[in-house]
Image (cartoon, rainbow over the protein chains, first blue to last red):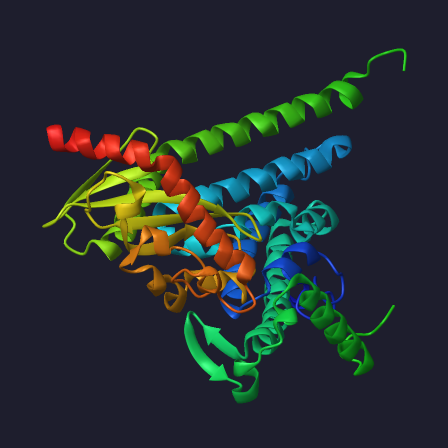
Length: 204
Length: 192
């Protein structure tokens, strides 16, 4: 039990996929333009991450080593397509706002990374714990990045379409650069530097 | 490698084949149960887009290419799907038209505009989906679809001139291109 909790916790801080492992940066940087996007992406990643870890962990005993990566990729791609189709059919509103992010999950290396580095070597329970922890860690990271990008880039914070906070000076003259791709790098770089400088994350 | 080793060489191939087959079967199954639902959801979403402009819409009909529509309401109405090429890719729009005389594009009056899909920059170009921009396309003559700085009725979004221009160019070129099929569709509806 302690073991499982440890696996759950490590994804959130000590091995945070975005801030420490620097995995899955492509979708993180691309999608983090608003808090809503961050929440939606987290939900989708969480589902695929957990399902992929479950399947990979279950077949870890029979998967031949030489073809394990193609096998993982096929499983992840199939899962993402299933999520995509199911969402389109049953919750079209959500699917519309997440539209382009769902296929992006296939190339999110957090999922392949965890399948390869963890689920292919560990038990089912540990793999599920790892997936949940990594999912939360990803969610926390992308939400923090989105918060700064949305605040600086548009001058207001909206959650599920409702404005919750608006910075008076910024709203009239937003720094649009933070909404653009290069703003993602600026925010991520500054966050990483701050986290390291303050010792929240340890280098090496 | 002179001799084929079954365990080392054949088993991985078979395993991968099995995984792919199982995935394909799973996908085919999911597709078979979701296909109709997705199509209905798409149709519903499109109907909703149309009914924004035609609040009393009862039904609509489209041509084979699915880019021109006749809307049945208290008063008949027309709609055309238009495509513009924006800063981030294709902008797909729906132009609602008043039921005017269809002798030439000059007589057309826009009833409204909505954006179906786009990939413009969030925070800049994606303002084309906001009402302050879209409302400018209500009750304007087709000839007025031009930026105000070149004499038209439409104000560009500051910081997103390319996206604004793409919307306008898309409307103009698509309507000119699809005008004949709209006329054809309207006359076929009126005959039947």
